[in-house]
Image (cartoon, rainbow, N blue to C red; front, side, top):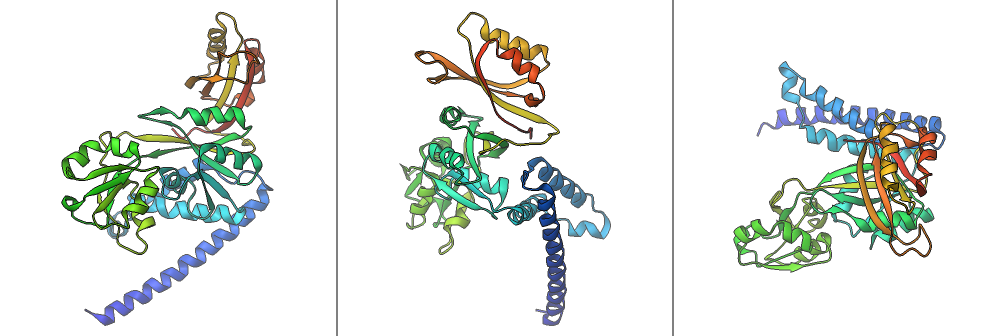
Length: 370
């Protein structure tokens, strides 16, 4: 070991760390000035954050010559700036986020992907509790799944928009990557695997091939399964790779295999909900709205025709049973839709739709990230 060279290199790193801290402090000061300029307005702009990261990743990969040796992994840039953004938002306004708990669920990790660690995460035991806390003002935001590319719509969450007057202020798409985690590093010695039934089902083929003698035990969540698996020598769990860090603080908890689910296109669309709607203009607006049609032939067709004539593209249209829209009607249905436009800017359209609808409610206007 060349101790002299090592000492010189460490001194250089110390100088760079000091310079980085100075730059971060200057950025923090500017963030506070931005908060004053906003005067209490929206603090979360996911599209702007996404564009900043993309630009930095492009600059990073465009390096040439000697600079090429200093290129960082693109994913590292995304992780670093997610936390910088998160810190900036916390300086502008203390923020809390309710999610389906406990800590370690896919909802929890989706919240970390979206908003970073510099906020107060509030675990809830069910979706109703998330909506209730947001509506009561106990938390600033809630994160709920709307639909999954494999399982379809999460109907319970759609129904809760009828119970609580909350709004969608952002969407987030999170890939569900199932991993096998254990204290035991030899898969052949694993005797029992704990996880949520859905995770076990999605990973059935891999587990049958690589852990054929292991018992599969269903748990209420992947997070609870990991907490149990980490206490047993020859136990494992199926869940998010982040569980290795979350549950392995005191003992080693290894990721033995990644992406073990049968389908590789498992993506969940989450909605970030808040008590009030977004304000301002969006570059690629999406409007989520709900409506019930009057009880006469062709009413839904008329609604779709009005949207078609206005050149409004619907990316989602789904019906759910409704017991509040029309008193005394046991077979009334409420429609949920996503429009590729800002419907707040089209009051004449809303007026035309009311001729064929009992009610229309805009759930939120936000940036379309696809």
